[in-house]
Image (tube, rainbow over the protein chains, first blue to last red):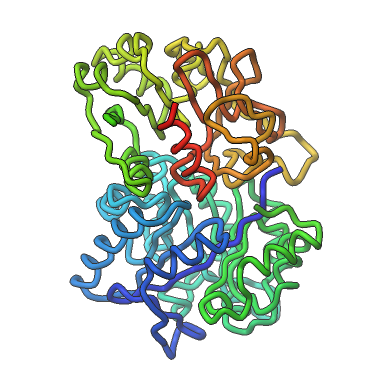
Length: 251
Length: 199
Protein backbone atom coordinates (compact mmCIF):
# COMPACT_ATOMS: atom_id res chain seq x y z
CA UNK A 1 0.00 0.00 0.00
CA UNK A 2 1.14 3.50 -0.78
CA UNK A 3 2.68 5.05 2.32
CA UNK A 4 1.61 8.37 3.79
CA UNK A 5 4.44 10.87 3.42
CA UNK A 6 6.11 13.02 6.07
CA UNK A 7 7.66 16.13 4.57
CA UNK A 8 9.86 18.58 6.47
CA UNK A 9 9.84 22.03 4.91
CA UNK A 10 12.92 24.21 4.93
CA UNK A 11 12.62 27.93 4.33
CA UNK A 12 15.78 29.26 2.72
CA UNK A 13 17.01 32.82 2.81
CA UNK A 14 20.31 33.66 1.12
CA UNK A 15 21.32 30.00 1.22
CA UNK A 16 20.52 29.41 4.90
CA UNK A 17 17.58 27.61 6.51
CA UNK A 18 15.22 29.82 8.43
CA UNK A 19 11.80 29.32 9.97
CA UNK A 20 9.33 32.10 10.36
CA UNK A 21 6.71 31.87 13.05
CA UNK A 22 3.53 33.11 11.37
CA UNK A 23 5.76 34.21 8.47
CA UNK A 24 7.49 36.92 10.56
CA UNK A 25 10.16 36.91 13.26
CA UNK A 26 12.60 34.83 11.26
CA UNK A 27 15.34 32.80 12.94
CA UNK A 28 18.23 30.97 11.30
CA UNK A 29 18.44 27.26 11.97
CA UNK A 30 21.29 25.94 9.85
CA UNK A 31 22.78 24.66 6.61
CA UNK A 32 20.00 23.34 4.33
CA UNK A 33 22.06 20.55 2.80
CA UNK A 34 23.17 19.28 6.20
CA UNK A 35 19.68 19.55 7.60
CA UNK A 36 18.17 17.91 4.49
CA UNK A 37 20.59 14.99 4.69
CA UNK A 38 19.81 14.55 8.37
CA UNK A 39 16.08 14.44 7.65
CA UNK A 40 16.63 11.94 4.82
CA UNK A 41 18.65 9.72 7.16
CA UNK A 42 15.91 10.06 9.80
CA UNK A 43 13.28 8.76 7.39
CA UNK A 44 11.73 11.88 5.86
CA UNK A 45 9.90 10.83 2.69
CA UNK A 46 10.44 14.00 0.77
CA UNK A 47 11.68 17.53 1.41
CA UNK A 48 10.48 20.97 0.39
CA UNK A 49 12.89 23.88 0.07
CA UNK A 50 11.24 27.28 -0.18
CA UNK A 51 13.34 30.23 -1.25
CA UNK A 52 12.22 33.31 0.63
CA UNK A 53 15.08 35.43 -0.70
CA UNK A 54 14.03 38.69 -2.27
CA UNK A 55 17.24 39.68 -4.02
CA UNK A 56 18.61 38.65 -7.39
CA UNK A 57 21.90 37.58 -5.79
CA UNK A 58 20.00 35.40 -3.37
CA UNK A 59 18.21 33.70 -6.26
CA UNK A 60 21.49 32.72 -7.88
CA UNK A 61 22.67 31.33 -4.55
CA UNK A 62 19.47 29.28 -4.40
CA UNK A 63 20.04 27.61 -7.79
CA UNK A 64 23.57 26.71 -6.67
CA UNK A 65 22.11 25.39 -3.45
CA UNK A 66 19.62 23.22 -5.37
CA UNK A 67 22.52 21.65 -7.26
CA UNK A 68 24.26 20.88 -3.99
CA UNK A 69 21.05 19.43 -2.50
CA UNK A 70 20.58 17.21 -5.58
CA UNK A 71 24.10 15.86 -5.21
CA UNK A 72 23.72 14.99 -1.54
CA UNK A 73 20.08 14.01 -1.10
CA UNK A 74 18.84 10.48 -1.86
CA UNK A 75 15.11 11.24 -1.58
CA UNK A 76 12.86 13.41 -3.79
CA UNK A 77 12.66 17.13 -3.16
CA UNK A 78 10.50 20.04 -4.21
CA UNK A 79 11.70 23.62 -4.55
CA UNK A 80 9.59 26.72 -4.52
CA UNK A 81 9.58 30.45 -4.00
CA UNK A 82 9.88 33.13 -6.64
CA UNK A 83 9.16 30.87 -9.62
CA UNK A 84 7.19 33.05 -12.01
CA UNK A 85 8.05 31.80 -15.48
CA UNK A 86 9.00 28.65 -17.37
CA UNK A 87 12.66 29.63 -17.48
CA UNK A 88 12.83 29.67 -13.65
CA UNK A 89 11.39 26.16 -13.50
CA UNK A 90 13.73 24.93 -16.20
CA UNK A 91 16.76 26.21 -14.28
CA UNK A 92 15.65 24.39 -11.15
CA UNK A 93 14.85 21.20 -13.08
CA UNK A 94 18.31 21.12 -14.60
CA UNK A 95 19.79 21.88 -11.18
CA UNK A 96 18.22 18.59 -10.06
CA UNK A 97 14.88 19.47 -8.44
CA UNK A 98 12.28 16.68 -8.66
CA UNK A 99 9.32 19.04 -8.41
CA UNK A 100 8.68 22.75 -8.25
CA UNK A 101 6.01 24.50 -6.26
CA UNK A 102 4.28 27.63 -7.50
CA UNK A 103 2.00 29.82 -5.44
CA UNK A 104 1.49 33.57 -6.02
CA UNK A 105 2.64 33.38 -9.64
CA UNK A 106 -0.02 30.76 -10.41
CA UNK A 107 -2.71 32.93 -8.82
CA UNK A 108 -1.61 35.91 -10.91
CA UNK A 109 -1.18 33.85 -14.07
CA UNK A 110 -3.07 30.53 -13.93
CA UNK A 111 -1.92 29.67 -17.48
CA UNK A 112 1.51 29.08 -15.92
CA UNK A 113 0.21 25.78 -14.49
CA UNK A 114 -0.83 24.57 -17.97
CA UNK A 115 2.48 25.64 -19.48
CA UNK A 116 4.57 23.97 -16.80
CA UNK A 117 2.57 20.74 -16.84
CA UNK A 118 2.89 20.58 -20.62
CA UNK A 119 6.62 21.31 -20.61
CA UNK A 120 7.75 19.20 -17.67
CA UNK A 121 4.86 16.85 -16.84
CA UNK A 122 2.25 17.13 -14.09
CA UNK A 123 4.40 15.17 -11.66
CA UNK A 124 6.80 18.15 -11.63
CA UNK A 125 4.18 20.78 -10.74
CA UNK A 126 3.01 21.34 -7.18
CA UNK A 127 0.52 24.17 -6.73
CA UNK A 128 0.81 25.65 -3.25
CA UNK A 129 -2.22 27.45 -1.87
CA UNK A 130 -2.21 29.64 1.24
CA UNK A 131 -5.75 30.33 2.33
CA UNK A 132 -7.52 31.93 5.28
CA UNK A 133 -11.04 31.03 6.38
CA UNK A 134 -13.55 33.39 7.93
CA UNK A 135 -16.34 32.62 10.41
CA UNK A 136 -18.68 31.91 7.49
CA UNK A 137 -16.30 29.19 6.24
CA UNK A 138 -15.29 31.20 3.21
CA UNK A 139 -11.68 30.38 2.45
CA UNK A 140 -9.85 33.21 0.70
CA UNK A 141 -6.68 32.43 -1.21
CA UNK A 142 -3.85 34.73 -0.15
CA UNK A 143 -0.52 35.58 -1.75
CA UNK A 144 2.82 36.98 -0.60
CA UNK A 145 3.09 34.70 2.38
CA UNK A 146 -0.48 35.19 3.49
CA UNK A 147 -0.31 38.99 3.51
CA UNK A 148 -2.48 39.80 0.49
CA UNK A 149 -6.00 38.39 0.03
CA UNK A 150 -7.11 37.64 -3.54
CA UNK A 151 -10.51 37.19 -5.16
CA UNK A 152 -9.93 33.43 -5.42
CA UNK A 153 -11.59 30.90 -3.16
CA UNK A 154 -9.73 27.79 -1.93
CA UNK A 155 -11.89 24.94 -3.23
CA UNK A 156 -12.62 26.30 -6.70
CA UNK A 157 -9.01 27.41 -7.13
CA UNK A 158 -7.69 23.98 -6.13
CA UNK A 159 -10.03 22.34 -8.65
CA UNK A 160 -8.94 24.78 -11.35
CA UNK A 161 -5.28 24.04 -10.57
CA UNK A 162 -5.98 20.31 -10.94
CA UNK A 163 -7.81 20.84 -14.23
CA UNK A 164 -4.92 22.91 -15.53
CA UNK A 165 -2.48 20.07 -14.86
CA UNK A 166 -1.16 20.44 -11.30
CA UNK A 167 0.28 17.16 -10.01
CA UNK A 168 -0.25 17.91 -6.33
CA UNK A 169 -1.84 20.56 -4.10
CA UNK A 170 0.06 21.86 -1.08
CA UNK A 171 -2.57 23.53 1.10
CA UNK A 172 -1.51 25.75 3.98
CA UNK A 173 -4.22 26.99 6.27
CA UNK A 174 -3.23 30.45 7.45
CA UNK A 175 -5.65 30.00 10.35
CA UNK A 176 -3.69 27.00 11.58
CA UNK A 177 -0.13 27.87 10.55
CA UNK A 178 2.06 28.53 13.57
CA UNK A 179 -0.61 27.56 16.11
CA UNK A 180 0.57 23.97 16.69
CA UNK A 181 -3.06 23.04 17.34
CA UNK A 182 -3.41 20.59 14.47
CA UNK A 183 -4.10 20.71 10.74
CA UNK A 184 -7.21 22.07 8.96
CA UNK A 185 -8.68 18.58 8.70
CA UNK A 186 -12.20 19.59 7.72
CA UNK A 187 -11.01 21.64 4.76
CA UNK A 188 -8.41 19.03 3.81
CA UNK A 189 -11.03 16.28 3.70
CA UNK A 190 -13.21 18.45 1.50
CA UNK A 191 -10.26 18.97 -0.85
CA UNK A 192 -9.51 15.24 -0.87
CA UNK A 193 -13.11 14.43 -1.75
CA UNK A 194 -13.22 16.87 -4.63
CA UNK A 195 -9.77 16.30 -6.18
CA UNK A 196 -8.05 13.34 -7.83
CA UNK A 197 -4.48 14.53 -7.21
CA UNK A 198 -2.54 14.06 -3.95
CA UNK A 199 -2.86 16.67 -1.22
CA UNK A 200 -0.05 17.80 1.04
CA UNK A 201 -1.34 19.25 4.30
CA UNK A 202 0.52 22.16 5.87
CA UNK A 203 0.03 24.42 8.85
CA UNK A 204 -0.69 23.55 12.44
CA UNK A 205 1.41 20.47 13.23
CA UNK A 206 2.34 20.50 16.90
CA UNK A 207 1.97 16.92 18.12
CA UNK A 208 2.23 13.38 16.81
CA UNK A 209 -1.55 12.94 17.13
CA UNK A 210 -2.06 15.75 14.63
CA UNK A 211 -0.49 13.60 11.93
CA UNK A 212 -2.82 10.68 12.69
CA UNK A 213 -5.75 13.09 12.37
CA UNK A 214 -4.50 14.63 9.14
CA UNK A 215 -4.22 11.22 7.47
CA UNK A 216 -7.52 9.85 8.78
CA UNK A 217 -9.90 12.80 9.32
CA UNK A 218 -8.09 15.07 6.84
CA UNK A 219 -7.55 12.27 4.25
CA UNK A 220 -4.26 13.92 3.27
CA UNK A 221 -1.59 12.06 1.31
CA UNK A 222 1.29 13.86 3.00
CA UNK A 223 1.85 15.99 6.09
CA UNK A 224 4.25 18.89 5.95
CA UNK A 225 5.79 20.73 8.89
CA UNK A 226 8.82 22.83 9.70
CA UNK A 227 9.53 24.01 13.23
CA UNK A 228 8.58 20.79 15.02
CA UNK A 229 11.28 19.07 12.99
CA UNK A 230 13.83 21.89 13.01
CA UNK A 231 13.70 22.22 16.78
CA UNK A 232 13.51 18.43 17.16
CA UNK A 233 10.26 18.67 19.08
CA UNK A 234 9.04 15.59 17.21
CA UNK A 235 11.93 13.50 15.83
CA UNK A 236 10.89 11.84 12.55
CA UNK A 237 11.76 8.25 13.62
CA UNK A 238 9.58 8.68 16.72
CA UNK A 239 6.74 10.13 14.64
CA UNK A 240 6.89 7.26 12.16
CA UNK A 241 6.92 4.68 14.93
CA UNK A 242 3.87 6.31 16.49
CA UNK A 243 2.01 6.46 13.17
CA UNK A 244 2.76 2.78 12.53
CA UNK A 245 1.38 1.89 15.98
CA UNK A 246 -1.76 3.84 15.13
CA UNK A 247 -2.27 1.79 11.96
CA UNK A 248 -1.13 4.46 9.49
CA UNK A 249 0.91 3.04 6.61
CA UNK A 250 4.28 4.78 6.60
CA UNK A 251 7.64 3.85 5.16
CA UNK B 1 34.53 0.29 -13.97
CA UNK B 2 33.22 2.01 -17.04
CA UNK B 3 29.59 3.03 -16.52
CA UNK B 4 27.55 4.79 -19.15
CA UNK B 5 24.21 6.55 -18.77
CA UNK B 6 22.44 6.79 -22.11
CA UNK B 7 21.86 10.41 -22.99
CA UNK B 8 18.59 11.18 -24.72
CA UNK B 9 15.68 13.57 -24.49
CA UNK B 10 14.52 12.42 -21.05
CA UNK B 11 14.35 14.47 -17.88
CA UNK B 12 16.55 14.28 -14.80
CA UNK B 13 19.27 11.95 -16.08
CA UNK B 14 21.68 13.86 -13.86
CA UNK B 15 20.02 12.56 -10.70
CA UNK B 16 21.09 9.00 -11.55
CA UNK B 17 24.65 10.21 -11.94
CA UNK B 18 24.38 12.02 -8.60
CA UNK B 19 23.31 8.75 -6.98
CA UNK B 20 26.28 6.90 -8.53
CA UNK B 21 28.62 9.64 -7.34
CA UNK B 22 27.32 9.12 -3.81
CA UNK B 23 28.44 5.49 -4.19
CA UNK B 24 31.88 6.73 -5.16
CA UNK B 25 31.61 5.89 -8.86
CA UNK B 26 31.41 8.14 -11.85
CA UNK B 27 29.38 7.57 -14.98
CA UNK B 28 29.66 9.09 -18.40
CA UNK B 29 26.44 10.52 -19.81
CA UNK B 30 26.65 9.94 -23.56
CA UNK B 31 24.78 9.04 -26.74
CA UNK B 32 27.96 7.84 -28.48
CA UNK B 33 27.20 4.27 -29.74
CA UNK B 34 30.84 3.15 -29.41
CA UNK B 35 31.05 4.28 -25.80
CA UNK B 36 27.73 2.66 -24.97
CA UNK B 37 28.76 -0.62 -26.66
CA UNK B 38 32.07 -0.74 -24.81
CA UNK B 39 30.80 0.16 -21.34
CA UNK B 40 30.86 -2.38 -18.50
CA UNK B 41 27.43 -1.29 -17.33
CA UNK B 42 24.75 0.71 -19.11
CA UNK B 43 21.97 2.68 -17.39
CA UNK B 44 18.88 3.73 -19.31
CA UNK B 45 16.95 6.13 -17.07
CA UNK B 46 14.06 8.33 -17.96
CA UNK B 47 11.14 10.48 -17.10
CA UNK B 48 8.94 11.47 -20.00
CA UNK B 49 6.41 10.39 -22.57
CA UNK B 50 6.70 7.05 -24.38
CA UNK B 51 5.98 7.84 -28.05
CA UNK B 52 8.20 10.93 -28.42
CA UNK B 53 10.99 9.18 -26.56
CA UNK B 54 10.77 6.05 -28.75
CA UNK B 55 10.77 8.28 -31.82
CA UNK B 56 13.92 9.98 -30.56
CA UNK B 57 15.60 6.62 -29.89
CA UNK B 58 14.75 5.40 -33.42
CA UNK B 59 15.97 8.60 -35.07
CA UNK B 60 19.28 8.24 -33.29
CA UNK B 61 19.36 4.45 -33.84
CA UNK B 62 19.63 3.97 -30.12
CA UNK B 63 16.74 1.48 -30.26
CA UNK B 64 18.74 -1.16 -32.14
CA UNK B 65 21.83 -0.43 -30.09
CA UNK B 66 20.05 -0.94 -26.74
CA UNK B 67 18.55 -4.32 -27.66
CA UNK B 68 21.92 -5.54 -28.97
CA UNK B 69 23.78 -4.81 -25.70
CA UNK B 70 25.42 -7.78 -23.96
CA UNK B 71 26.60 -6.17 -20.71
CA UNK B 72 24.26 -5.56 -17.74
CA UNK B 73 21.71 -2.86 -18.65
CA UNK B 74 19.49 -1.13 -16.09
CA UNK B 75 16.35 0.64 -17.24
CA UNK B 76 14.67 3.03 -14.79
CA UNK B 77 11.03 4.22 -14.81
CA UNK B 78 10.25 5.17 -18.42
CA UNK B 79 13.35 3.09 -19.25
CA UNK B 80 11.54 -0.02 -17.96
CA UNK B 81 8.42 0.83 -19.93
CA UNK B 82 10.36 1.37 -23.16
CA UNK B 83 12.08 -2.00 -22.70
CA UNK B 84 8.65 -3.70 -22.80
CA UNK B 85 6.88 -4.71 -26.02
CA UNK B 86 4.17 -2.07 -26.15
CA UNK B 87 2.89 0.93 -24.21
CA UNK B 88 -0.66 2.20 -24.11
CA UNK B 89 0.78 5.70 -23.81
CA UNK B 90 -0.02 6.99 -27.29
CA UNK B 91 -0.13 3.38 -28.57
CA UNK B 92 3.65 3.03 -28.78
CA UNK B 93 5.61 0.04 -30.01
CA UNK B 94 8.57 -0.24 -27.66
CA UNK B 95 11.90 -2.08 -27.66
CA UNK B 96 10.45 -5.53 -26.97
CA UNK B 97 13.16 -6.79 -24.62
CA UNK B 98 10.47 -7.86 -22.16
CA UNK B 99 7.21 -9.30 -23.47
CA UNK B 100 5.21 -7.54 -20.74
CA UNK B 101 2.81 -4.82 -21.89
CA UNK B 102 2.53 -1.33 -20.41
CA UNK B 103 -0.93 -0.09 -19.47
CA UNK B 104 -2.39 2.97 -17.81
CA UNK B 105 -3.61 2.71 -14.21
CA UNK B 106 -7.40 2.80 -14.08
CA UNK B 107 -8.63 4.05 -10.68
CA UNK B 108 -10.90 1.65 -8.87
CA UNK B 109 -14.17 3.46 -8.11
CA UNK B 110 -15.24 3.42 -4.51
CA UNK B 111 -11.86 2.93 -2.93
CA UNK B 112 -10.95 6.37 -1.62
CA UNK B 113 -7.34 5.52 -0.93
CA UNK B 114 -6.35 4.22 -4.34
CA UNK B 115 -8.15 6.38 -6.82
CA UNK B 116 -5.24 8.65 -7.53
CA UNK B 117 -3.16 8.47 -10.69
CA UNK B 118 -0.17 8.92 -10.93
CA UNK B 119 1.02 6.39 -8.40
CA UNK B 120 3.30 8.74 -6.54
CA UNK B 121 5.23 8.13 -3.38
CA UNK B 122 6.73 5.27 -1.40
CA UNK B 123 5.38 1.78 -1.83
CA UNK B 124 6.56 -1.68 -0.77
CA UNK B 125 8.13 -4.18 -3.19
CA UNK B 126 7.87 -7.94 -2.69
CA UNK B 127 8.48 -11.32 -4.36
CA UNK B 128 11.98 -10.17 -5.18
CA UNK B 129 13.68 -12.37 -7.77
CA UNK B 130 16.79 -10.74 -9.12
CA UNK B 131 20.40 -10.00 -8.27
CA UNK B 132 19.32 -6.37 -8.03
CA UNK B 133 17.81 -7.19 -4.67
CA UNK B 134 19.07 -8.57 -1.39
CA UNK B 135 16.75 -10.75 0.77
CA UNK B 136 16.38 -8.05 3.44
CA UNK B 137 14.77 -5.72 0.88
CA UNK B 138 11.56 -7.80 0.82
CA UNK B 139 8.58 -5.55 1.67
CA UNK B 140 10.70 -2.42 2.00
CA UNK B 141 9.62 0.90 0.49
CA UNK B 142 10.94 2.52 -2.69
CA UNK B 143 9.91 5.69 -4.52
CA UNK B 144 7.54 5.60 -7.50
CA UNK B 145 6.16 8.28 -9.83
CA UNK B 146 4.22 6.87 -12.80
CA UNK B 147 0.83 6.66 -14.46
CA UNK B 148 1.61 3.59 -16.60
CA UNK B 149 2.74 0.17 -15.39
CA UNK B 150 4.03 -3.11 -16.78
CA UNK B 151 1.77 -6.02 -15.93
CA UNK B 152 2.99 -9.16 -14.20
CA UNK B 153 4.67 -11.72 -16.42
CA UNK B 154 7.43 -14.20 -16.86
CA UNK B 155 10.11 -11.53 -16.36
CA UNK B 156 8.68 -9.89 -13.27
CA UNK B 157 11.55 -9.58 -10.79
CA UNK B 158 9.70 -7.60 -8.11
CA UNK B 159 6.02 -6.89 -7.49
CA UNK B 160 4.29 -3.81 -6.12
CA UNK B 161 0.60 -3.37 -5.42
CA UNK B 162 -1.23 -0.19 -6.39
CA UNK B 163 -4.81 -0.64 -7.59
CA UNK B 164 -3.50 -4.02 -8.79
CA UNK B 165 -0.24 -5.99 -8.56
CA UNK B 166 2.24 -4.89 -11.23
CA UNK B 167 5.93 -5.33 -12.13
CA UNK B 168 8.07 -3.12 -9.90
CA UNK B 169 11.10 -4.67 -11.61
CA UNK B 170 11.77 -6.86 -14.62
CA UNK B 171 14.73 -8.98 -15.60
CA UNK B 172 15.65 -11.05 -18.62
CA UNK B 173 19.25 -12.20 -19.19
CA UNK B 174 21.47 -9.09 -18.99
CA UNK B 175 18.52 -6.68 -18.98
CA UNK B 176 17.32 -5.29 -15.64
CA UNK B 177 14.70 -2.62 -15.07
CA UNK B 178 12.93 -0.92 -12.18
CA UNK B 179 9.68 1.03 -12.36
CA UNK B 180 10.67 2.89 -9.18
CA UNK B 181 13.53 5.35 -8.87
CA UNK B 182 16.47 3.73 -7.04
CA UNK B 183 18.30 7.07 -7.28
CA UNK B 184 15.57 8.63 -5.11
CA UNK B 185 14.81 5.66 -2.86
CA UNK B 186 17.06 6.43 0.09
CA UNK B 187 19.40 3.76 1.42
CA UNK B 188 17.49 0.87 -0.21
CA UNK B 189 17.76 2.54 -3.60
CA UNK B 190 21.48 3.08 -3.14
CA UNK B 191 21.90 -0.59 -2.21
CA UNK B 192 19.98 -1.64 -5.36
CA UNK B 193 22.27 0.48 -7.54
CA UNK B 194 25.26 -0.98 -5.72
CA UNK B 195 23.95 -4.51 -6.40
CA UNK B 196 23.58 -3.64 -10.08
CA UNK B 197 27.18 -2.43 -10.21
CA UNK B 198 28.30 -5.79 -8.76
CA UNK B 199 26.48 -7.89 -11.40
